[in-house]
Length: 84
Image (cartoon, rainbow, N blue to C red; front, side, top):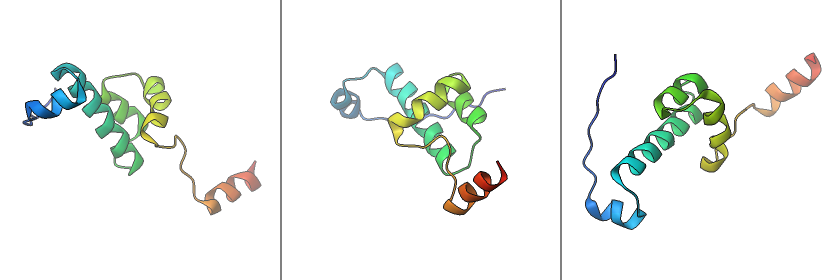
């Protein structure tokens, strides 16, 4: 089951972005998914589902939003290297 959320977007915003409603909706979903993944609210799989794309496509698109695929602290990275 899907839930529907509606938001009002001023026409001027779409005009400024030179995007259709459909393009804006797609881009907004991807931006929200990327941010929710970045702040660890969603897994990459769930974020991809929100964006309406495959997990691989989602992961490949993250760099456009400045979101790293792997976000380890220095300590976590050192621990992984030691355990390798």
